[in-house]
Image 1 (cartoon, rainbow, N blue to C red):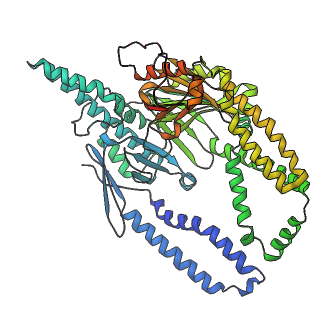
Image 2: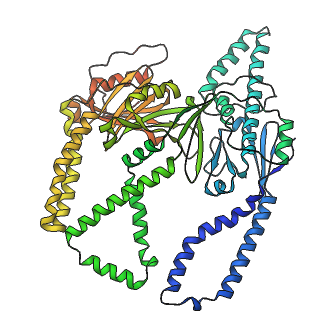
Image 3: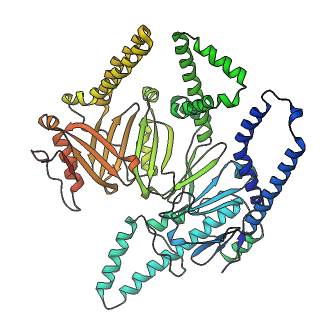
Length: 566
């Protein structure tokens, strides 16, 4: 058993930093309220200073005890974490159960030159897995290499067992063992950790772990790390290559062409909701009275200005999030790293990709650009990774071939027929009519401008109808749809858990059906309305097709019920 290792000593400051970060907004509000109409001489500086000194001392003492009582040990087949000041907790994480080992640099760790190691296991909620919040760069690299070595050890033992079975008199044992090994890569969980040490290649689940720790994030730790390196020889580095890097100019274009107005408006709304507390009473009442005297035209100008400010704010937030965007390959693993204030490095195995989404925004589509996301089966809270924020649509097939060769960029081969246009237009027109009626009632004649929403909604419905469609090629289903932006999703058949085919009586009389595809992750479920009945039946036959069977041509009649669960 190896010696216990502690976190970096700067971990002592973490409770103090977390408390300061939490108390800053409260302190600002209290200060503004207290100083409203009072002078600085009225503040009891003596008692305030004494309270601050006592609080800081207690937090530093708690940080020291927390650091002293937090140790982790690398054992033969597991990592053992012991932590807790008042209540002790012991967490044993077997290497065979480790889903991924991510290296993160939140703002505090980034300022202190440290990194946070997050050990994810199947079934663990966010924060429930093993987290080492403050280690040096080289210690994070050492942990990754240790996990790789343990993974290789387990796989070498798995490969030894079939060889031993084949030397025995019973051929049945060999066939059973071979069958279990052939099924094992399809399981999302990782094989049992209780295997002796050896070195060798790895099958799919272990391969993810082995390559995951291969990423060198950091630099060197002290004493304990050196001893561990002596005890565990570090394997040679495997192939590492940079697949793409986003330039500053391309990042700026991506930020300006993908406004996240919901996030920006929420931020602006949050500031407005606290205006009563942040501003002195006299200023707030004056602004409130002035706002009541504004004409409707002034409100339109203010709304336009707020929209522009929100757009610029979303561009700033986008730039901060994706600054330094880099995609690298470490062996068979893909690493995506980005972030200006908080640097995150996310790794995934291409075999665990459930689906790929290509999103073409309104502005980007005019210039032939799109963003590409991958949806990965993982126990982390983050399951949707940006593969490229701004890519020429003509370059998407080459990108998929390099990163996820099991997916291909297929063109749409079937679209909704003209008689299905009403299914795409009706609800949009109904919503626009309701909004127009409300605006006319409230703003009187000025509200008549809202009638422009009706032709816009009609055009929106026609675009949604025109851009929708599907394609079935091999084991891949491609579905394209449009809400505001046009989204194309590539889905592999093994990742689909259920399908729903639906259609009202009126739709069935017109030979139209709707399709809903359900995935393991409900966030990436996909649906398509108003398709030809034969096309939907072809997709149903493709989904029900067993290995070795050929797809039967679509039947003539539709399902007997209005909703059929496949």
